[in-house]
Image 1: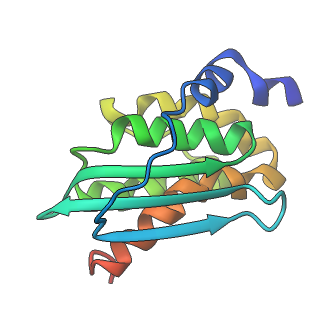
Image 2: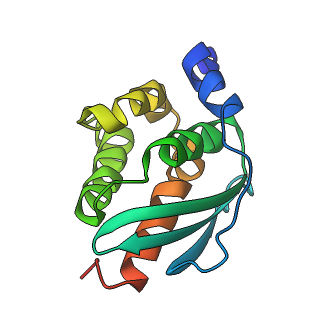
Length: 144
């Protein structure tokens, strides 16, 4: 049911999105746009070795894109590049293959997005932030 998409945890996450902030000197930046709905997320990352040291983001997205972006922004600093690549794969699998929500304490709140799996037209906006972060990691040589 569509009301599952706009449940309390999803709306709370969307409402709790950190204020838009861009980094002055990011190591990498990426922008992703959903062709389906026009939602867009732009991210900046600064890395120390293979760990996110700082993160900036602007999100002009639907509630689902904002919820995902919010949860990532609140938890990404301190995450290792390899763990973020796993996270992107876990989110894709959860939405597109019926897999479990992402594992680990840092990302457990992303389970709130599990109902999105039943609405394929909403997958793209939900995955924007994960794809943007992965694009940044690829620019920095963490994706082979």
